[in-house]
Length: 219
Length: 216
Figure 1: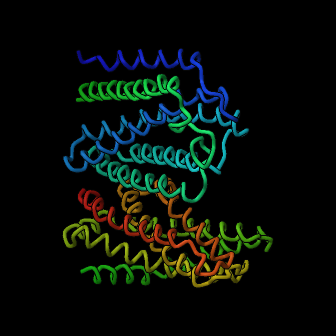
Figure 2: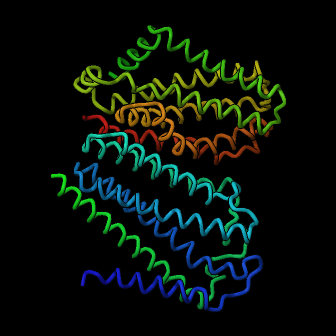
Figure 3: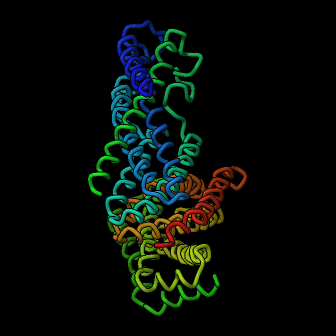
């Protein structure tokens, strides 16, 4: 049964969408009901980070094995990751409006990190569009993907030293950290993480199949 | 071999007086325009930010062309005569030297036309040196990528800005300390450590990745 993960992802996401709004949550200062965003916002970012890692692995494979298939997969993973960054940003922004009182702030390292990673993705796509030769495109974009991934991780590691994060769980804010999430919340949060990650792999799979068919048609 | 390549770079650069002169006019012109726009009304954080924005844009403009002339027959010649590691080392060393000279010139004219706010000059020069080498190292690789991607200037800046962000943010942070005149004892040496680490990391990654860009 090779479709098990699709079924699980649908069940988990539907369950968390519904039960995430209904289940009791702890009353924390500032956060109050908005703590439910942890069921939607955080898992979507996890799915994006997962897809970025998949993209990196395929880029490394494309470099060492020198083949097009891995390059296409790296591109598809980046596309899916980019796709996930949009709801991630939107949910975060709406949440920030109600807890921090602003749609966007430059005081928070995570927000800056996200902005930079979206810029890196866009640069990666534009780089790909500007090279016509397939083999050449595979090598060049893989080199950029690897370099940019490392730089972005450096960025994520450095920035928290520069400014305190406003995010819950950092710098003394009431938190999504382990001790603030009670068992009721974990019952929704963990399935949500698994569900969204499985969903991202499903999308990735579909994108790959479309690329494969397009390739066949072109040949 | 590497020294030979660096010599060649210098020769090419200085034989064409338009390039080196163009760079100087570009820098002085940018600074003069900023001076006119701000009319000397800069507080310290703005002074610091403006200086690094000017340095960032100059370095992207200058390093952007470092691989652009290596196309066609020239690229084939390089490919047959040098190993990729030699080539990228030579490019990086040359760009670092050039960028170093350029950032000190920028600082001189910036101090001359706008004003010099730096109180801990020693620290500022350390930051300036590490920033120049870091910028040069990252931009060498980016320039190599951009030149393979039909090398227009927009691609160069699009690729470079996001990956330069960690370097620039750390640099602005320490440079602010130098501008504020913090004594050596209070300086955030872990940030200088990060700068050195970023330099080393970029050079190491370029060693690993450049050979893949090399063959066409």
